Amino acid sequence: MNRKKILKIVAILAVAGLLIGGGIGAYMFFMPHRDIQKSPTDFALTSSELVAEYLNDMEQANQKYLSADGESKILEITGTVAGITEDYNGQQVVLLKEPGQVAGVSCTFMQETNSNATALNIGQSVTIKGVIRSGVFYDPDLEMHLNAVLEKSDVVF
Figure 1 (tube, rainbow, N blue to C red):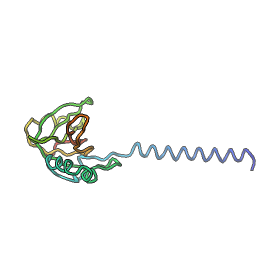
Figure 2 (cartoon, rainbow, N blue to C red):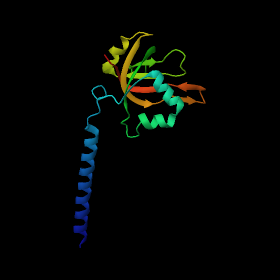
Figure 3 (cartoon, one colour):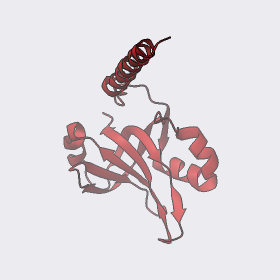
Figure 4 (cartoon, rainbow, N blue to C red):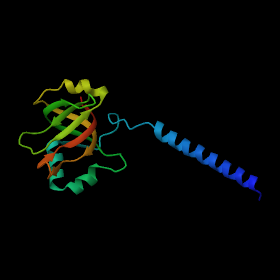
């Protein structure tokens, strides 16, 4: 084969590779995200039950609820509102924690659902649905238990 023919084949393969790679990238970027509030709940439990599961066997609880591919379980957590704050992104964060517990469940709301969180009161019993991102664990550097984290949360009415 002559040099021009080889360069032509390489150029065609490079363009085809770029088009295929670009198509896959665009598909992944524009792929619809999972709608947590419309998806079925995987587990419904109280904040005390979730905290107890993580304190008893963190490894088993992580296998049950968390997934490395981003498709962690959708939970409905029922508990008592112990605090309502706002994070740096302007999202409401509701802490569900029973009196006397070492940790609770921190539920981060979305911009669209913030108004539902601001309607809550401290001491109110509520059920919140969201996707779990981390469980309860003890941090030896801080010398305290850190709360479980639910994201994309909303109040279940």
